[in-house]
Length: 469
Ligand code: FAD
Ligand code: NAI
Image (cartoon, rainbow, N blue to C red; front, side):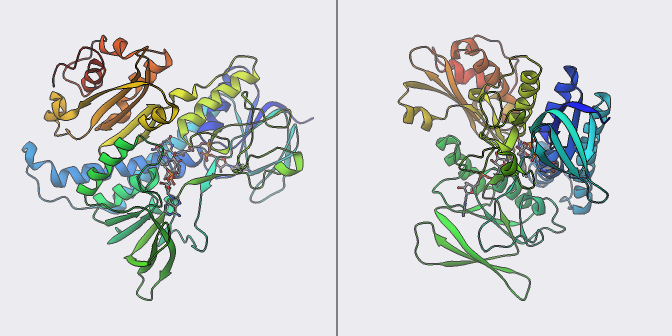
């Protein structure tokens, strides 16, 4: 008689692999079905991790070329060794996916290689690339199949010249002209990588602003910073088509979003970064009756249960921000729920970080959202130009902005533009988890000299005033 698992998870991204580990820790017998050769999903293989390897390397390349002199480090102009930079990316990915292998063995999680299809509640059919299919018997199923890049109609991604994020991570030479479609997180992060390595980057964005969803003041100021770094923006514009030329270049047809005269932009590579869509292909959801919402995401209740008993879903394939840490936290929550605990994710305090230079980090409400909700709020702001450590690091760009309730002083949102913003945001996440006030933060001692003192100063400015401005 074949083993019966307590839980079978389809997909080994941050949602799936974290759910598997927590479920095993809680005593369940766990299986994971993965169709890719390596574990870790989009994030570890073609997303968060490889992009951060290139962002780090290209940032140092840029600094060596531009900032070292002012710090008294005279070196010849740095020379790009792109194959080695790509090796760094490959080795970083290998170390991370290998880490998931190790954790699975440690937690006695069984991996089935192949595409998982839900044959019925309690039955997952696994079809490997070669060899025969097998059925995994299980008490519960978690769908953690993630998302894939969205595409523009009529534009064919070849991953060489017209690329998604996946191709943009593996270009074998720096394009002279990179055209990015979409001023979202992927467009700005990967656009930054190639701009630092020498490409002329133009970003075409449908809306009249970059980074929709982020605080609009942050987005406006950040756009100026990117423009100073040499990036061009064509806002309120859409790409109508891309024509490949005989000389290997691209002619990109760009139109005003509202319609009007077409303009042709020349490029060597075009990156399509207009969002991602949930991935449910091949799962057989229509046959078992798992309902999807209007955007193709698996519809779940507050306990991540789909419309069918015994079938759950987490991560990019359900509603909410498409972020690795959101998927991970849902993984922990669903494992806890399935073992009888009260698993929970606080969606009001999920940080978001854009890993550019400077970084952008935010948590909670934006000023735009508070205005729209009619909430009475006050703003505490502090610039890094007035922070001692930032001056020593030549990292004075940006500011901290904290939004708190006028009546209760409870912190409702926080937004940081600045070096290491992605590390600094977490004291605000914890503060918000504890429903803290700006006074709580302002009364907490911060080590000197640190960039985080700017966070405290922003909180102080919501009370009797910041000290250093
Ligand atoms: P995924 O990571 O997409 O994993 C799904 C897995 O399911 C895949 O391994 C897939 O092969 C497998 N699968 C699918 N269908 C089947 C099937 N039928 N049978 C078997 N296996 C199947 N987020 C951040 O928070 N921070 C970042 O810095 C960040 N950077 C990113 C950079 C890029 C370029 C991209 C593209 C994304 C980035 N993201 C980032 C988003 C992040 O990668 C996703 O939010 C996260 O991976 C979602 O996790 P998941 O577990 O839901 O799904
Ligand atoms: P996105 O949703 O962040 O941005 C897409 C952008 O493209 C938007 O500004 C949108 O207005 C624009 N757009 C849409 N259609 C367009 C069109 N036809 N022409 C021009 N512009 C158009 O999506 P993106 O950048 O592709 O990233 C996908 C997901 O991956 C995001 O949801 C993000 O959460 C996640 N991600 C997270 C990262 C991080 O946390 N640092 C890094 C990279 C990705």
